[in-house]
Length: 282
Image (cartoon, rainbow, N blue to C red; front, side):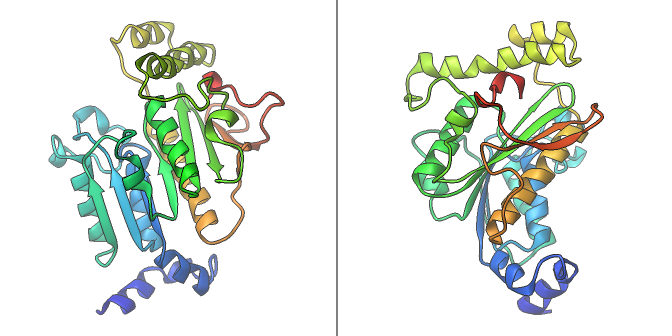
C-alpha cells in the first residue's frame, strides 16, 4: 500500500470527529515531546496513531524495571534500552511513514533552542522543575505554544496550555524565580526544592508521611501509578490536538485541568485562583 493510501486508511476513524481538512493539517504539523516516560511515551504513541506528520522525542534515560508499572513503552524485553530508541521504533511500527527525530539527551539551556525551533507545539513531560522552566521559557521566546503538566501523589495531576502572547509559565504557577538565569546553581536548587514542598503537601492529600521524608532525604523516588500518568498523557495530547487544529484548548493558561482520581469530581477545568496557582499544591 502506498504512503497516501496507508495514511488515510489509518486515520479514517478520526474523520467525523475531525474534518479531513483538520486531519490534513495534523499531517503537516511537527510536535516535540520532552520526556518519554509515563506521560511522554504515551503521548508519542497517541500522536503517531492520530496521524501527526512529525514527532521529535527527547529523553536522556534508559528503561528500568521500575518503569513497567506505568510506562506504555516499558517492556521486559527493552530494559536497559534508551527510551528514545524504543519510542522511535514503536512510533515507526504504528505509522511507517511518519517523520521522526528521537534523541537521547538531557534538555538544558545550551541545546533547548536548537531542539524546539521549527516545531508547531511543545509538550513538556519531564519530572524536574528546572527543565520545565527552561522548556516553557524557550517555547515562549520562539513564539511556539506549549503544554505543561504536573503530577503529585497519590492520584493528582494538572495540565495547562501556554501561548506566546498569554501568561508565562512561571507567572501562572507562581514560580518565584521569574526571569532568573538557570545557570545560577543556587537558583536551580531553589527551583528543585519546590518538589520537596510538593511532597509534604501530598501527605495532606493521602500520601504516606514516611515516603515524603524519604523523598526529601533522597532515599525514595516520586511515587506514581498508571492512572495518573495516563490521564496526564491524554489531556496533554488533547490540548495539543486542539491547538494544532485551530480549536480552543480546554485549559488556556491560566486555566488548568485539575485531576484527582480519588475525588468525587476526578477531572475539572478550573480558573486559576485570584493569586494564581500554587505549584506546591499541584
